[in-house]
Length: 285
Image 1 (cartoon, rainbow, N blue to C red):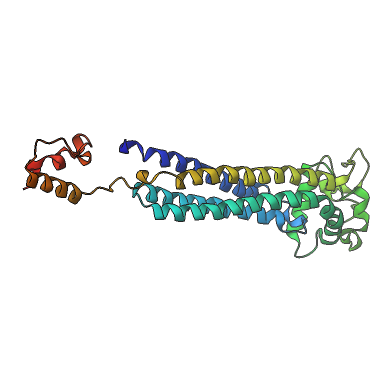
Image 2 (cartoon, one colour):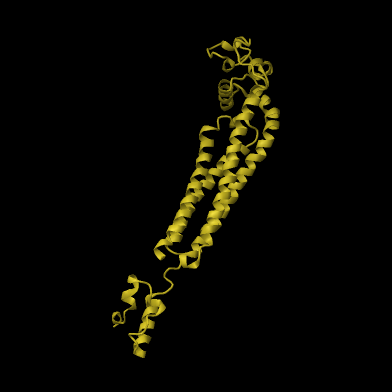
């Protein structure tokens, strides 16, 4: 029976490690592939949620190793420490999920208040190359032009400073991207969509915030019961060597003194073939 005990915590640890890997993967995915438009956001909440998930995932992987060591070395105090660390990770994941949902509600207001200002004042301005790249990518990928509409570009610093070179909108607004195509803002030449780029960017970020929130809260709620199952395992699962050879020796010596070698075996000596050498009186010299 004892040989089967390590398999139980191993299953829990595998589930916990997989959950941690999933959390870390979503965080890295956000930072690596979904962060192009962070420079257009006034708040750092979106980026913070991604970093929290990455940190939580890394810590889960590290504590998973601790959990394996604690289980196979049969150290219950280490399992308690492992559980405490997982509780901290659980809180981090829940915080990431809550931040994602809070920012989800605030996103529309933030974009309306800041996106137009960011695009009109920072596009093609010195020191704001990241904003310029993000705006061009936003307009090309989402087929939009301007924060609300193409007319927003008329009041931009880019045009007023004379950097536009005769363009009335950036070339990234054009349906067919060629140098100088932004000189005509006719609907046949540039993208004109209802709601402008604000609507497109809001939809994109909200969809990803739903993923972050679901992963943070969902996996966090799955991890904690698994950790609780580890902690609530019976003592026997972590203390398989509670009866040491000296215990057996003491029992056998007492049996010799009583001269009852043929007596019924002690409960200590009912462990099967593995314990026979210790449970045989002749083994003690």
